[in-house]
Length: 266
Image (cartoon, rainbow, N blue to C red; front, side, top):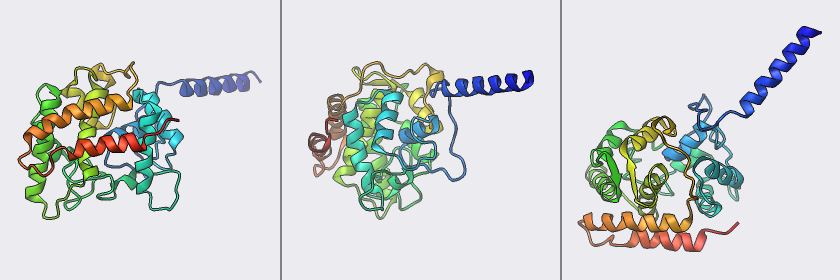
């Protein structure tokens, strides 16, 4: 009886320790049958368990709670992202999405990714070191809006010259600008709009939060207003570097219209 009681207590203690474990330190890459997508951040959150580790059947509550707990996103941004994400689910009237749904080309996934090849050349759910090496070659030790925009334009030029089916929608352009504004803000200083290059490299290449490099969950909540403001800052530098006048401000204007029209208060 004593041995049985001891074993029961040991099992219970182990269960408590697991349930109380710090998800920032509990990283596990995908296992057989799990899915991942083209977004390094969402893949990272699944690897840490902030989203379902399988990468499947992600609901609005999953996304809202996961993004809040991981990086202090407010519910409006999560709702905005979720509305787009479920549009990639081929199942009609779905209330969930899986990360591999996001790889459907020219829905949310787009050409000129910072870390993936274009759909013409391969799969967007797979990190591509060569593409990312080009991106980070335009960053200094500190990434800011200028170097972030320079990397975007460089990837666009490369993809236009190597992909005979290259295309970029207004939505794709808006997401490119928003992605850069987001990783600078989340991994670095959302006010100064600067981030250590090593933190960004760590997350993109490992799909893991860079806690061992000193990063911590932001104390200030990341809101729609902050995202739009920081996206605008990236867009200003982006527009300066465009050779074409056709695109002009369409990406940032479109992003603002989307957020103002689709983000909802929960």
